[in-house]
Length: 189
View (tube, one colour):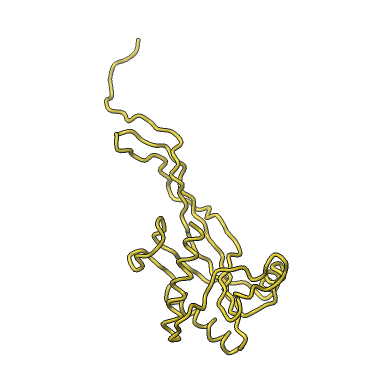
């Protein structure tokens, strides 16, 4: 679910950038900023890089229904769904600083105009995802410095967005409960 949602976001952002700048190639990708050996991936060169930097479980939960009706009239007991917020670092990595800023501005424009993406507008959303909400994360200079230092990367102009409420439901059946078909008023003696 996480991978398919981020790939979908990458594809929609790429389409936006191609339309905005009249490009034929994709300029946004999902990747780490730094390889495990400390080097910068060559594929990130002259690209917008989307990196997952944190996953946070949404702790405010709606009323969870654990039972689902089965075709035979019985009920399946399943674990309630969980919702997660994904924190995304979107960095602009171009040789030309003006290009870096131009593409970063386009990314911000994309999220300003697509703060809510719903299946009704994007029929190609991954199965199980009905909506994605985005909001910019406000972090200060010290926090940004700490983030880039902890990743072991050199800073490039970037922005952080929270992708809100990604719902995960495995639908694994824990138990099957027989449906009540009749209520008796007989008192046991």
